[in-house]
Image 1 (tube, rainbow, N blue to C red):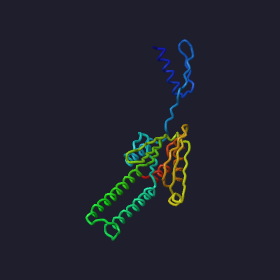
Image 2 (image 1 turned 135 degrees about the vertical axis):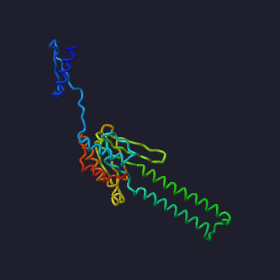
Image 3 (image 1 turned 60 degrees about the horizontal axis):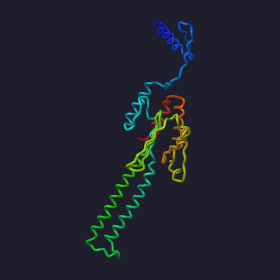
Length: 249
C-alpha cells in the first residue's frame, strides 16, 4: 500500500512539472516509464466573451441548436432575386388566365358558349388562379427554407426542394479544405449573387449554396473563419461583428 502511495505521489509531482516522458522507480529500483497517450487541445479565448456570443446566438437564432461554447458567426439565405423570378413567372401566368377569363365571359367571341355556362367558367378560372397563388406561396416557403449557417465550430446547411422534403448537412470547420465561389451570366454579375462552394478533406465532397448574395465577400469571410478554427483561435471582435452585419435571419 505504501509503495502504491509513494508511486502515486511521484506521478503527481511529475505531472505538475509538465514532463513529456515520465520515468519512475519502484522500491526495488526497477524503472517505470510512462508516456502521454494524447494531448487534449483546449480552445483559447475569454470564456466571458464566448458565453456572451453564445447567449446572443441563442436569442437571435432560437431555431438553431448550438453547444455551450458554440455561437453563430454567419447566417446566409438565398438572394431574393431567385424568388422574384418565380413571382414574375406566376404573375405572367395569372395575367394570361385573367385575360382569357375576360375574353371568354365578357367580350364578344366566336365560341358558342351558352350564357348560363359562364358562371361555371368563372369558377374554373377562379380555382386555377387560387391554386396558382397557393403554389407561389409554397415556392416562397421552400425557397426561404434553404439556409446556410456558420458557427465557430461547424457549417450547417438546410436544403429544401419541396415542402415535404428537407435535408440537413453538417461539416466541422476543420474538415473544410477549400472555399471558392462562382458567378456566371449577366444577372449574377448585375445583381451580385452566385454560388459558394465548400470542399472537404478526404471524401472530396463539395457543398454548394446557390443564389448567395455577395459570394466573393462570403467566401473570403468563410476562409478567415476556417483558418481561425484550424489554428484553434477565437474569432476577433472585428471578424465577429462583420459576420453579424452580413447575416440574415
